[in-house]
Each structure stands twice: as structure tokens, then as C-alpha cells.
Amino acid sequence: MERNLNWAVLGTGVIANEMAQALKAMGKTLYAVGNRTHEKAVTFAEKYQVAKVYDDFHEMFTDPDVDVIYITTPHNTHIGFVREALKNKKHVLCEKSITLNSLELEEALTLAKENDVIFAEAMTIWHMPLYKKLWELIDAGKTGTYASNANEEHEEIADWLADGVPALGKVQMIQLNFGSYKEYNMKNRFFNMDLAGGALLDIGVYALSIARSFMESKPDQVLSQVKFAPTGADEQAGILLMNKEAQMATLALSLHSKQPKRAVISCENGYIEIMEYPRADQAVIVEAESGVRHTVNAGETKKALQYEMEDMEQAIKTGDVHKLKISDTKDVMDIMTDLRKKWNMKYPGERWE
Image (cartoon, rainbow, N blue to C red; front, side):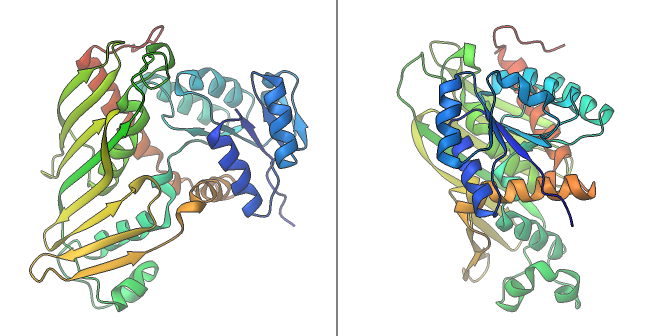
């Protein structure tokens, strides 16, 4: 009988609560919790019937009964905790942004390889069933028509094909908006440079992940405009990407100007529109010539973290990490790092080289 993996969570905030609820929905119980404030960890453990609370949260990293750690702390703290976990041979699923920059990410991935464990980003977009089916749909129809055996070759989207969803052809243009309306308080984490604030690492990572996932290769041309908050954090930005296949993406990000979380993937024969895209379970596909609309569904928004952990567990048990999209995570981090270098936006104590 296959042994259940023991999960521990570092942090007790919103994501940690969602993670504990997701494990419960999977028929499992969170094994351990750690937090800087011990009292918060105790309260969290009582709420979710967690078996173990550490007096010192660093004990989590050396606990022989812990298999995988979900890190939910602010992203400027990630690399220190990730180092400690990986060096102690713990698998790690880390909340976005996975690290501050490419240098930190490369270090962490090297440590994971040296210690024969898996390190991956808890990026909802990599794991939502809707995106897995949309990527399959794009692949099946990238020539503009479906192969005669498409139903057999692409079983995951057989239901969509049966409903008449068209072959979309090559992806040409992607448009992404993400705008929050955060209180204009320079001490909160969204604008605080000491907490690695700013739009790019907080919300831009979602938009860039969508863009990269629908592009055939990593963008090699990047242009941008940025507006800084009084603290020096990026308050809003416009970003233009293009790769060697001439696929383009435009991103509009803002922390103090509300926008819809809207993605449009424009192809040769139609376009895909996705609302609330970080945890989307529905998309509308519009045929270019006729304007016929097809509404497609997959998965459930409320199960977003469950899908993350299921894919992580499968990777740990099988060694197959393709669902974790680590290469795409690296590409997104490279883009974000290069953008901040161009903006000369360096966080306190951060190393770029």
C-alpha cells in the first residue's frame, strides 16, 4: 500500500488556510505547521486538527517525518527557507513569486537536484484543468485543422471536439490585464520595498505565466513602461513581449487602479477569452469568421490548491515533473528579473549577481 506523503506548511495566512482546506478535500490531514508567532501556529493547528506544531518553526526542516513543505510566507523570505528545506532533503512547493530573481531560483533548483528532491512553484495556472485542456486544444489545432484521428490523439479534449470547438491555428497575440485597488498605504506589503512589494512579483507573475504558457518559446524581446510608487515599488506597468515566432503579448498591471483579470489569446481562426484567469474554470472561444461562441469548462475554481498539491504528489511519487512546468517558471522569472534590472528596481539586500 502506497504511503501518504506528510505535508507541512510554513505560515498561517490566507494561502495556508486554503492549503489545509484543500488537503481535507483530498481526504488527508495536514501533518505539521510552523510560524514565526507560535500562538498563531497553535490556533491554526486547532482549527485544522494538525498533528504537530513546532516551538521553533526551523524544526520543520529537520523533522524526519515531513516529506514536503508548502512555503506560504512573503516572497522576499522564500530563498532562505527554501535553502534550509532543500538541504534537509525536503520537497518544496513554494508560493509565488517562487524567488525574488533568477539567481535565487537557479541556486534553489541546483540544491534540489543535488539533494534529489523536487522544488516547484505553487502557480495555480500550471495546474488548473482548464489550462491543461486549452494547451491541448491549441496543440491539436495549431495547423488550422484537426487531424482525422484527433479524438484518439487528444482524448483530454474529446468532449470539446464533439461539441464543435474549432481548430484555432497558431497563437498570434495575447492580451492580459490584472489591476488591483490596494489602499495607498506605503507601509503595506504591496508597496513596501522591504517586503518585496510591487505589481510585477505580486500580480504580474500570473499574467506572465499565462503569456509564456501559450507562446511556443520564451520571449526574446521585452519592452516596458513603469510608474513607481513613492516607495520605489512598481505601482503599474505596461509590458510588451515577442518571441522568435513573432508571437506577441501585451500586459497591463496596476496595484492602485482596478482592472478585470482578463486574458485574450488571439489565434488565426478565433480567440479565447478567460475572465478571473488565476483560478479560471471557464473560457469562451469565439470563431473569427462567424462569431460563433463556445463556452468551455474544466475543473473548479475552489479546487485550485488541490490541483497544485495533486500534481506535486504525482511528481514526487513518479519522478515525472512535466506538470510542474519548471522550465516555464524559469522563463517567467528571467523576464521579471530582466525587467527590474532595466527599471533599476532592486530590493534591499537583494543580489542580482
